[in-house]
Amino acid sequence: MADDTKDAFKKVGLGSANNAYDIIAKLDPEYFEKLKGLYVDGTFGREGALPRKTKELIMIGICCALLRPRGIRLHSERALTLGATPKELMEAMEVAAIPGGMPGLWAGVETLQEILQAKGIEFK
Image (tube, rainbow, N blue to C red; front, side, top):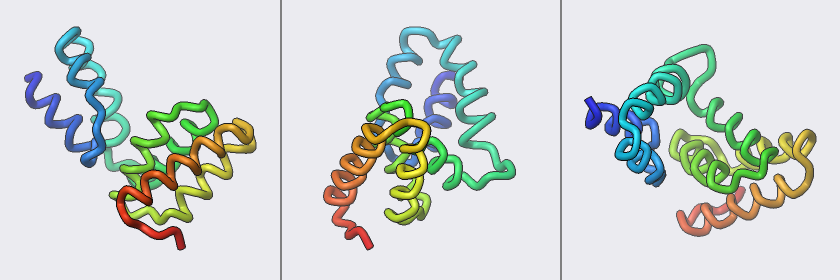
């Protein structure tokens, strides 16, 4: 069962690296199985009213507002993989500046620039 759960996390991860799930699976396999229910089955792997790209843009905004650099990176990479444009990511970050303040926007745009440069994508 643990391998199936790891595969499910990798599938919703869309290629973005997050080794924390491997560590959780090793240290507490029972919790890891339950986490799949919320993270994979209930949120990112579920076809609900919101498309996955929209969920990722929401997560970008939340991570910017809460100053969570790892989350900004992971969800930005995933949103781009799902077809979001750099402008869409930028707008999610700008909206987050209202509740979260300018430091969240700064963290977001710096991360976005790093990702775009690494992927050879031009901001248009």
